Figure 1 (tube, rainbow, N blue to C red):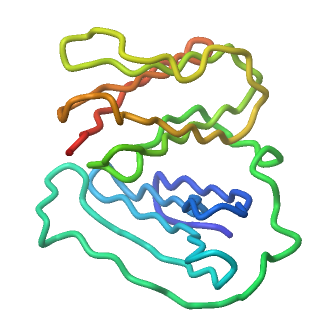
Figure 2 (figure 1 turned 120 degrees about the vertical axis):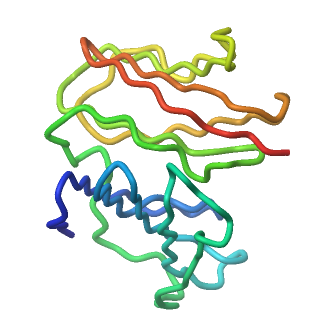
Length: 176
């Protein structure tokens, strides 16, 4: 899968046998628009559909958000899907968590173009460390981490990655 949009990022990841949605395509067209597609398994052993959710993440209003189903397309797990660990990105990146706002779990994706010492931490709005999600050396590749905020209060949280000399932070919103 390729994308020709300026500043675009493309990710392919493996399917899961669980009912979790998995990110299969990301296209960051600009710092105003963000689009994504996920594969979701509906009910135990039934079918998988591809769904997309383009939205504005800077000035989001609920009427601007929409979801859509592209196609119901299979009844069993496909073969030949490339594993996410075999894809090597060409630059470091920390992507916006999905979903956002979330309750109580969200998915955080990051890219490593080379082997890196990685720390991924979550902070409250006052800068207090809430959780360390990753603190280890990782090979080059695409990674996805689940963050469970079930015991936290609603509010804005910051997640920060440090991978070698790359440092980036993003905001996420927990709404209970």
